[in-house]
Amino acid sequence: MAYESGSFEAAIAAASGEDAELHAQLIAGFVESVQTQIDLLGRARCDGNWEVAAMRLKDLGASFHDGELVALAERALDSAPGDPVAVRHLMDYSVRLTAKI
Image (cartoon, rainbow, N blue to C red):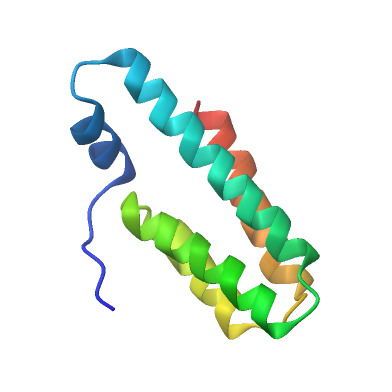
């Protein structure tokens, strides 16, 4: 599947227009979704659950034009289920993302 490149900020701005409240809600929803999927990925104990959580993260990143999240999710997909390094990189990303809002 091909993903259109662009920037996260531009995608949020295009979706919210001039509505600051909608902008904040979109970012909060994105952050919450990312954190939920990272939590599920960290708790995954089988290949299927690991792959589903990683694919959801990749799709979320692609939907919001967040190349860093797509790359981290692809790394998780290439890793063994439960890989602590992949989870740690995603958690670090989540901390940086939360600091932006």
